[in-house]
Image 1 (tube, rainbow, N blue to C red):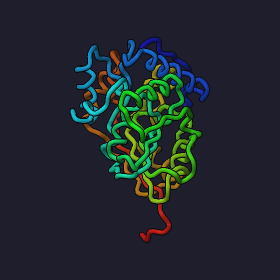
Image 2: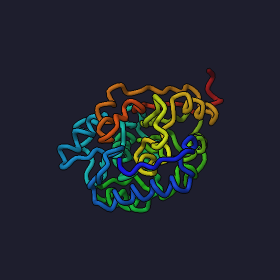
Image 3: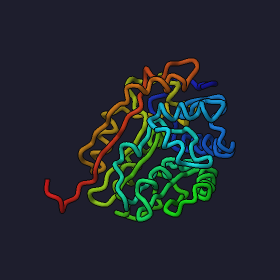
Image 4: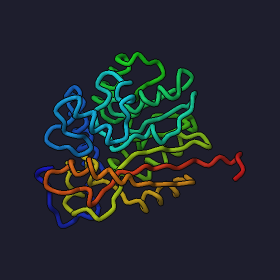
Length: 282
């Protein structure tokens, strides 16, 4: 990361409009680079020169060689920090929603799991990403995946219409995480669940990172702690909340900044919770 801002008022971080603009600009640029993942910053996106290097980073995130071989086109932009489909326990016929779907990689993996009777919807606020993902639908010759333009704080999805909500290193980018989780609860059917890969804080970040647009858009400055996320999920109505840090994520998080070891402050984690079903006895 470069050109960090300094300020005497760092506790609140960026204002919402600035944060959204920074995120939209960054990921729009990545989408326009036709699958070239990064510029001079590797945060939330491993800086690699070739396909083999990108695949190695994807394996660190938890994807198998079979996963990587299964999806064609520019869907895998290496923008995540985990593999949410691996923790989602998807069933044939499920309806799956991906928050911040990017190029669509996790959507296409989910589509394999839910089969022709299932359906996968990806939502992204960046028009260039949605266009890239829609191009990848044709490249993968799939009929059970669609992509919609929208903000994850205001999902273009009907109430109680989804079985599983997944997301990969995106919730941290939102300036209103409680609203994101309330929206996830709204669109889930009773008994539905979230399976999210994201970064969480393990120590207080240096104050300048909280107000640096590049840091926030790079999946660092906007991260929340595990207790904060647990509280947000519980207040949204979720039960059986479980947040499990991925101990070996320091291997790739250290590569996200040339000057600072970010693994001293954040760790990737698997975040799971359920929307209770009142018709099922406890």
